[in-house]
Image (cartoon, rainbow, N blue to C red; front, side, top):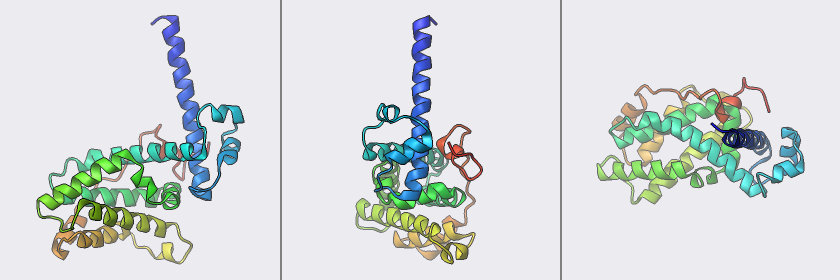
Length: 231
């Protein structure tokens, strides 16, 4: 490798590390202030960078939020998809994915808080969510597993239920304290009923063992777990 190529690679790696530092800081700030809050000043302070450095990467609050949504969503959904794609039954894929996501939120309070505050835009603006969910809903309808009038209605049921379930995790006591260990399964069970499955079919799907999400060491979700240090 020549000197120019080496310098270019090092510069690109340095730029990506700074970008991720800003995104990680933004996750903390958005999670506590909300997706509609003006957070640039707080992110600059948490990341300990200059205003000029920040604006080299993001121009607006909205651009920063979109970057956080994309990074988080792609990380989580990519890990979930590796597991659910092995399921031939589209209903099992959807049920497994929802359960894995909800269990992950329970284990990662900062992520749950961000998703609750970001709202349905978290999913609607994520390309992977919009690739996987319509696929499985349509396949479930085609195979007679789901009984909904359209993919769009199915999406509303899935996204609306999942978001409300995550939001409930972040509410003050006593509600979170009263949520049982089976909460992800209970939510998924009733979601499947809403999609037109029978009680027996839904109970069977939520009783199937699942693989819990494991984050790669350098993933944003790994660095922002409760045991991880803040940036």
